[in-house]
Amino acid sequence: QLVESGGGLVQPGGSLRLSCVASGFTLDDYAVGWFRQAPGKEREGVSCINYSGVGTNYEDPVKGRFTISRDNTKNTVYLQMNSLKPEDTAVYFCAAEKKRRNYCLPYVSLYGYWGTGTQVTVSS
Image 1 (tube, rainbow, N blue to C red):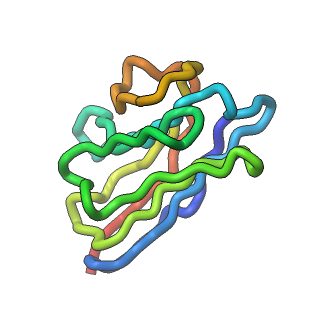
Image 2: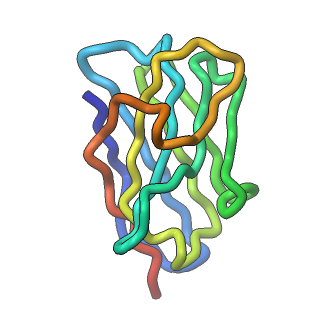
């Protein structure tokens, strides 16, 4: 089971840190991705991190603003979101893919284990 937390309401330009905690299994062998889905839109990739934390990937809309990291001792992956914009408003999901590669890809179809999401709203 994956559980996201850290969402909320923030003003444009503000920051939030999302957490994704795994229970019932360890994330050591998993790449983890963050995805988001805005109302009326398809779920899209945001960022991902490979099993060791060495490889990361970001989609263009969040490059330079979001940072993904992981702490395998805490079985947790984080998404630090800075300089938030209204268009970042969405439900954010984390997901895990059991692959030990030196890279990751933030594609929805690759990930088999999903959390239930946390709402992020950016508004003044």
